[in-house]
Image 1 (cartoon, helix red, strand yellow):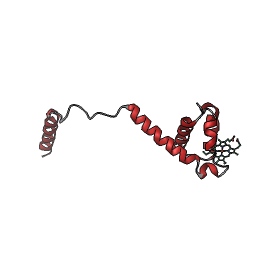
Image 2 (cartoon, helix red, strand yellow; image 1 turned 60 degrees about the horizontal axis):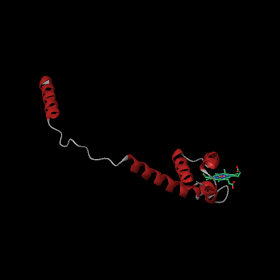
Image 3 (tube, protein in one colour; image 1 turned 180 degrees about the vertical axis):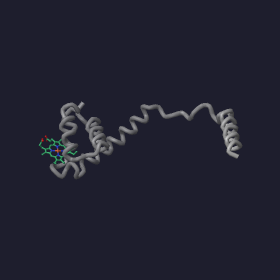
Image 4 (cartoon, protein in one colour; image 1 turned 30 degrees about the vertical axis):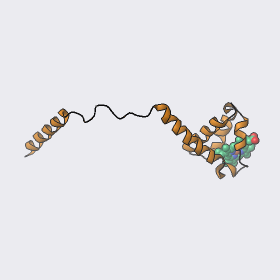
Length: 106
Ligand code: HEC
């Protein structure tokens, strides 16, 4: 009995292996650039909400205005320090930094 099951199993896998694939061309994936910018847009949006939330405003007023007044390099360290103070999760920090990068002085 065991042998029959084994033989059947082998036969089945051989048949499956020989069956031509339904479609040889995989569905086209969106170009990576689109995927990245979508993720970026979501992070930026999350960051814009976060910076005005009580996670940041519980210690001082909304600092949204600070961002466009300084280059990213000028405020990167400060923002990372604030992320620590606010005990942001890594995801929230990503959002905050994406927002800062997108809105910093060029
Ligand atoms: C635990 C309290 C605390 C939290 C939470 C906090 N901050 Fe701050 N933040 C401070 C203090 C105190 C200062 C002022 C002293 C200094 O510059 O270190 C400051 C200064 C700043 C400045 C500089 C302002 C200026 O005019 O020079 C920015 C920008 C800022 N915070 C952004 C944020 C953001 C964004 C968040 C949320 C992710 C945040 N902070 C969360 C305490 C906090």
